[in-house]
Length: 411
View (tube, rainbow, N blue to C red):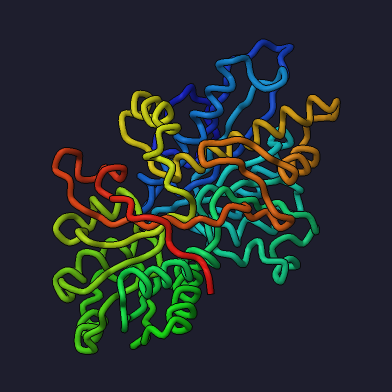
């Protein structure tokens, strides 16, 4: 792995380990926030938009003199690898050890993917290093039933500014039943921790709601051709297809299902909400797909307009909702550092973790607070549908995914 290089607001996708060091006089105090995302592979574009959201909040804080006298440095670690073609849990574990070993790191943001979260969480727990994920949704990581596995040191260290698939999957099944009036469906997953988990949760609720599940198959993300399974699904004539997974397999599902199953309802979780689906799947194949977002749809509310404009001006592209949850994750960490310093305590990872646990921070998505396991107390799931708008770039998530409303909760 290449040695760490210090850069000033510049990202090279080819470099696995990056750090932002903000100029500071020798006497100035500084702490570091880690960021871990899959900046290589199938999800790189959306990972970059998440990173940019977090960086925007940190850069705003530093431009105002830092937080309670502390400059905020950032180390960005890439958990995507060319070998995996997407996120790589082994690389995520390596990155977690790197952050734990750096005593200046007092908290972290990420990961994007739940498979990485499962690999990182035990390591971060042993290092008492809190991380806030703006995107990973597998509920096992924060479920107290699995505390011995994912937080062996006891305290919650894995926090979220999104809800989990315990709500994202079932709420979309409710949307299938109540709004789309689906009577039968077929389920696919991509074999990853996120994909299997959300597909399981969706399927259980769909069956509970009386939707007939005609079958379930697991895809190999590295395979190029899913025609055989899609042809099998066609022969069963379902009303809908639900895909649980991320974009490496998802792009191929979008493209190939259009040829084989052009007229049925197609949907997935937040793994099919992203620029790579629009670019890789393309139109007309992507047209009509439904996707969920494990957070409120904030991008279109008036309060978010200054953020959207600032983000677009700085980065030259529109943000996604997970750009906002990343921005909010950074706000929570910055607020925690401020409260620790104001209390006269040492700004270290133990005290910052405790402050994060007690957070009540006003953010773009409303007040962010966490339960005792690290899960956000707001459990809203938003539904979108891809509808081509030629007035905007065809990979512009903000304008090509149309907000359809909140997915219904309930039994």
